[in-house]
View 1 (cartoon, rainbow, N blue to C red):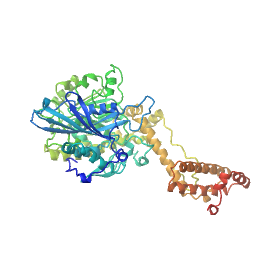
View 2 (tube, one colour; view 1 turned 180 degrees about the horizontal axis):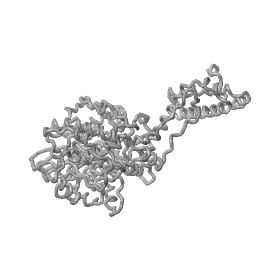
View 3 (cartoon, rainbow, N blue to C red; view 1 turned 180 degrees about the vertical axis):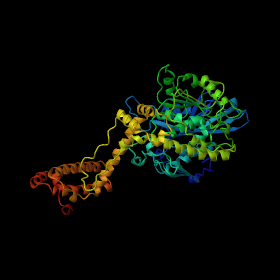
View 4 (spheres, one colour; view 1 turned 120 degrees about the vertical axis):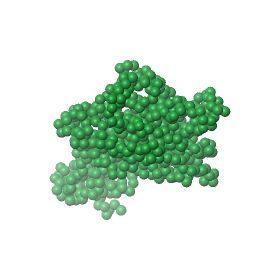
Length: 624
């Protein structure tokens, strides 16, 4: 949604929000005001009391741009949308990290310039807090609730909360229709494998691809922030995207600096989206300020100390000095005209005014080689990131030598649009699909060699589904690298990577992304294997299988079936039983009776001496 749909509050249609249903999507709605004397003030929080004092402070400092636009138009209004992410403080030292240990804040900020006011203007922000990274939901929702709040005031918050509480529960990876009054948000949610675990493993994860199998429908997201404007933000640095992909893949610390919060938060979102379908374990902060509790720790790092794996999006130039030892610095975006490094609302971060930021076709990184370009590149490298203190430029500063080569065939397919904002936005959509599909293919091919370690086994026809399933192949980093080096990385990657490609795998195995992703994929594979064996137990005719068993196999099967029956009983007693559980229980009893019938007579008599077991072994006709 590029424009705010028409929306009005009708008291007779007001819906009382259900707090429990609301929490499935939204943690809180906040109204923040910037007061010249008191600083950032939380004016309203709905529901009340859901934020700790530390969280209120964190939200307050993240809800406003670091500096105010310097436009001098009398009574002009400037709106922008951006988002931030912060770690929720623990309530006590013993508290274990919870699933929603991070909160996302989606901000609609309005700066009103009026010479009659103190310092010539005022600022307010409408903030939606959520434990989910559903930018495809909350950006368009902000385009409704932001203007509505400034039209009708606080009653807009409870009104919108009522509609949100009526939404169905989020279904990761699905297209959902979410009604808001007379508007309908049609949104694709990110898939389960890109989200933090909640109550165990998502069952839907079993369908996520491990081999380089690309979806035919590109509108279906394969990772976080699928809607981020990758081309629009990085069009001045397109040749560097492969380097940035590697840096995030291996978990290197990256500082991204941009003129405005919309640009820096979008740049971070784009970078995270590059590694889909890999689950990103790197701590990313779309908009990071000096007031964040983590800044003091980063600022205390000395030369030679290692920065933690993170991606920081900032607008304050002070970070260039405070974090001067950050190994990788990326500068993106363009300042708005007639302003002091400040611009508003990139196209996919919500274009709310009629003004286009316009990243400029002349910045497209498809320029031919020239001595001037080479000299400029050498000068940028020599001056370092501190040159941004005097003039903003798009550049990447890093000593990392990338292994993946830029794919010029992909760059040549990108469409160079004219300066018309409407045409440029349409072409950006096409270019985003080209780039995103390429990096999705690149990542899936990179992960494909790990596929055999997630290979599940189902029982063969005619065999007993009660034998112990084979374990998944064991993994050892040295053995994996040795086998991969001997076998080769495959045609797709070998054409796009230098001969030292094993080094990239070696760094990936040591980085922060590998273990969480690998363990999660193993858990999904093990869950899928359990499902297949459970299904086989429901379908197998044990009377046919037992006819081919020897006595030892029959005893083992009897013990195994008893164990599964015990698990089903415990599940039902704990309230986890359902119609499927009842059917499973009855099938297990029949299978137990089938195996019992082939056991020797003396063993049968011994087993029947246990009353509880004897009740399970009764003939079905005697059970009613």
